[in-house]
Picture (cartoon, rainbow, N blue to C red):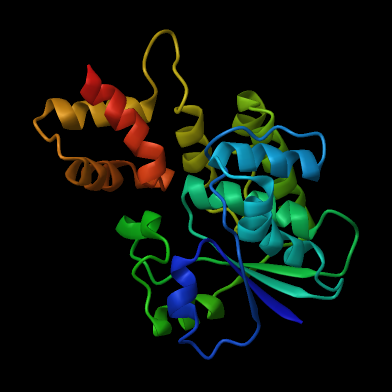
Length: 247
């Protein structure tokens, strides 16, 4: 059985127009935001429901139901993980890999990156992909070997624990499955203030605003052009923008 795990619903719309065979599952989460606490999955799901401000039943229907399909897939299933290179996508993918391989099994897992993008546009992921782009990306899929799977698990656990030194050390690992790991990890480490200095994303937003741009949509566009490595959406940037504007 072949499964395609898509990072969010937007990709699903164009994916339906392809001739790619297999069942589609959607990772509906933004694990770069909010608490990741929980000693077990039920507790973790409750934490995430609280982060999204919805009931556990709503979160179960919206998000957990998709993750349940991933975990309950046959042990000989083949997974294709359609994720971008940016921090938002990578964190979600580390989690998905951990779910797929949470016990010994014969599952094969491949990562499918937007390989049709030019180097200057690598952080744009599949947002502007066409049918031909998706089919070309699938043709260049990369198989996760046992060491890649273990790396993803280690990355997820270090990320959950907010263990920045461990993440920095893991970022030195070389893997074709995680080609921009150093940049992504450094971007995450830079999200936190050091010696009284504001975090990287806040500094960049402040500079954009101080240079005269105050419309949020334009600020968002300029930030994304400069710091696409984060893969931030409105939900991540708007609170910081509002804080800076309130000054």
